[in-house]
Amino acid sequence: MIVRILFQWLKMAKNADKIIVSCAITGGVHTPTMSEYLPITPAQIVESAVEAAEAGAAILHLHARDPETGKPSGDPALFAQICPVVAARTDAVVNITTGGSTHMLIEERLAYPLKAKPEMCSLNMGSMNFSIHPLAERSAAWRFDWEKPYIEGMKDLVFKNTFSDIEYIFRNLGESGTRFELECYDVGQLYNLAYFVERGMIKPPFFIQAIFGILGGLGPDPENLLVMRSTADRLFGRENYQLSILGAGRHQMSLLTMGAILGGNVRVGLEDNLYIGPGVKATSNAALVRKIRRILEELNFEIATPAEVRQMLQLKGARNVAFAESM
Image (cartoon, rainbow, N blue to C red; front, side):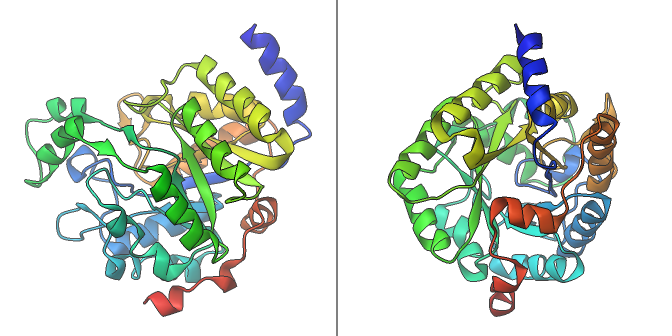
């Protein structure tokens, strides 16, 4: 059954748009002890993002971290050292998180995006349990004191994005022309998006990031990808959205390849996966971009440029952001 559906969608994918490659540079989940290659300082994040763009990433998903400890931060002063510099050195779409981390209040998460009014921001489409607390058991030595309690603490935290929170983000960022990477960790979050679509709070084309393999969300089973794709088709119509696939950890490359066959786009990066192969750490975000690009091009898919992405997603353009005012 799955094989037959894949072949049907492969025929459709041959006539689809070029594939959008997104790269999530550092995130707010992994900690410095987990990988020595995780960029921490603004300069490291900038260099890693520029390298990922040069490797073929058209969208750069950006978080900030405390440069002394590597702890995730919503400090606008740190973002101001990252986003304008990345925008000046690449033509990639700068996509700023509104998720931050499970430990941040919404005011912290939105402090910089509301100032910068970027082309794109991420937006989690609902509240959820979001945790990697089992990883706290895998390390006996931590580089920084905050890391172990931070990871263990996720067991008792909920990532909060209520309908009111989402409406606030849509109104305050959407009115400035910012569009969204709509992060959906479960089928119900597609229905949350449909609720806002019905009320005219967001217009197509939608950029839906379907996320698999995070504890608290959908598992990495191939069947779940089919369910998310068919549900999105039914709710929004294939012509009204772009689907992107995020596979956490070791599931990254296999799920992304399947997603591309289904006519979807892909997201890689050290935020989502620290390894480039079994037991082998990725030494950079660019290495992950190059790997998925090689896989896709071997399958005769074409990679979208930033200019093509701006057209596909109807973005407002790099000239219409407020990075200068946010510095």
